[in-house]
Amino acid sequence: NTEIYYDDDADESYLANTTVAVLGYGSQGHAHALNLHDSGVDVVVGLRESSSSRAAAKEDGLEVATPVEAAARAEVISVLVPDTVQPDVFEQIKPELEEGDTLQFAHGFNIHFNQIQPPENVDVTMIAPKSPGHLVRRNYENDQGTPGLLAIYQDYTGDAKGRALAYGKGIGCTRAGVVETTFREETETDLFGEQAVLCGGIAELIKVGYETLVDAGYSPEMAYFECMNEMKLIVDLMYEGGLGAMWDSVSDTAEYGGLTRGDDVVDDRVRENMEEVLEQVQNGEFATEWIAENQANRPVYTQLNQAEKNHEIEDVGERLRDLFAWEEGQTEQEDEDEEQ
Ligand code: NDP
Ligand code: MG
Ligand code: MG
Image (cartoon, rainbow, N blue to C red; front, side):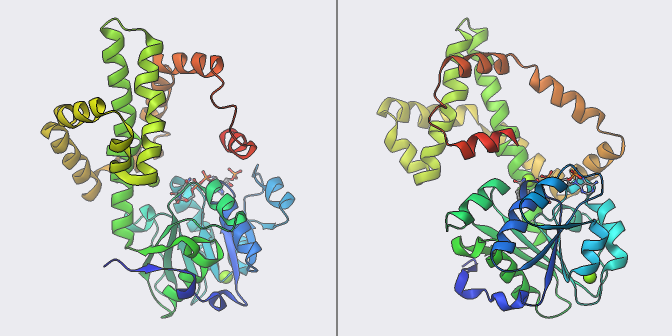
């Protein structure tokens, strides 16, 4: 019986006579700022003087100031710069926080792992759209919503939830539904999901499948189609109708083979590995490692990022995607998103 909030549960008057400072104009920042603005909320975008995003925000008709100036003017400060720079930006704006202001986040990492320690006399809230920013904007423009999460870390005013829901309404999340959670749960499930399943797990599954076929003498093109390209088609079916829609849509042979062999591949060892990954998220080991990695200018990240780009499957994919025009039907917006 998880609480889910919709438009009718959210009262936009909580943001009347309120200025929202949106710090950052990237993936989430541009979407929140534009959606709030179109919802009639007074928005000021906070960007450093040198920022390459300044021109875009101004061109989009928004007022731009420095993060410090924006925070000074606002009662709600939405922190949408990258997670790794949030502690720095927070130290800059901290003197501008006034009693009863709201610090609003879209991810709990810095609050949960104590990289940001807010004063006691402000509200600390989270509205986290469960989608990339460009979709948050596109959905809003199409009169649709984007599902999101709500969490309250600190309720100084007693109105924290009302204000957060008003913010969620302003960016279009309550049109689709906002699920209540905690900073801890959001942070830990998000980190686990991206490490074990979504980003880390799936990339390894694809690479190992590809390598297994190529090492056995099959052509890289065939291996690419089987292990990478078809992934999207399968995931689309799951997204639309769950595992059932996927199993219904593939052949009975694929269903029988998948159901009998899948758990031989992702076996109890993998389950134990996932439990280990979760433990490192929960006990803060991962957070400590990533914070130190950033302080050291990302030596491991830089190396792994490069190695991944050099994997053979990337060359094969680039060649095949050029040969086959299966992306021709995509919309201009999708082209734009990919360029971001
Ligand atoms: P982005 O990487 O897209 O943010 C980039 C913006 O931050 C740019 O406007 C950039 O401007 C600004 N910025 C970067 N460094 C600094 C700095 N040192 N000082 C001031 N401004 C800076 O961030 P995201 O939108 O990806 O993430 C924002 C938050 O949203 C994070 O907490 C993230 O976890 C969360 N989130 C992200 C999702 C996503 O899909 N991306 C989904 C859900 C939540 P400049 O030109 O100055 O560099
Ligand atoms: Mg202020
Ligand atoms: Mg994440």
